[in-house]
Image (cartoon, rainbow, N blue to C red; front, side):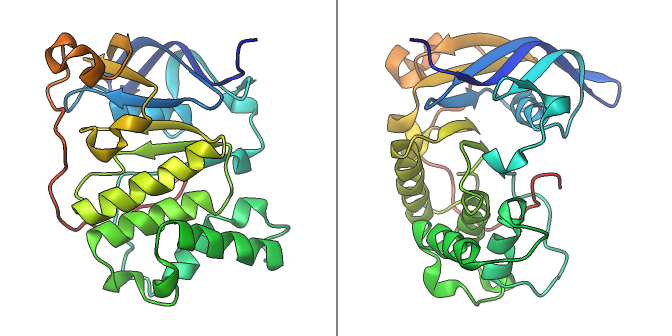
Length: 256
């Protein structure tokens, strides 16, 4: 029996401004799969996941989540999204718990938190090893800790589908390993994962399929590069064992 298709793009084209970015791509992610979008800078990886969640509208083709056309989807609590860390928190004096709790709002009734909601936030923090920093301001965190908070925020909703855009970018090796362990736990629990990667790093053993983009087109959909040999995938110029360290500001939410 074929597993349910959780994400499906059929002939999708998308533009940024007047510039074509996606040029008729097809993509299907089945329940329980871990699929990585790979490719050089500017290949369309991030635009593809932003089109999946509706941040970038498709100008042609069809996008479906859980078998429902994107425009008709109402149950966004089934989806957790981890954006790139490119937007600062704006100096808002938020704590780690407050940021992670914002990811739980889709599960609450009229924004009121009950015990189940507080427990979900606590579990998400523990999963990423940030339980001991729950009351700290996010401005006191390192780049790797910021990323762990963003992932905890996405996990707090207890999603069926987890979409992550460059989760390892600018993250130190210790945090990379924690994030890989966290993702391994989610995959073992049956979570479907679609993620953009610039480098495979410690996530490599978890990847079921790699979809390589080049100039907005799919050039490969199959085994990850290491299974084929790095040079077997035209257009993918960046497959390295680890991303460089560094800090970056905290990102935005699902529609940020």
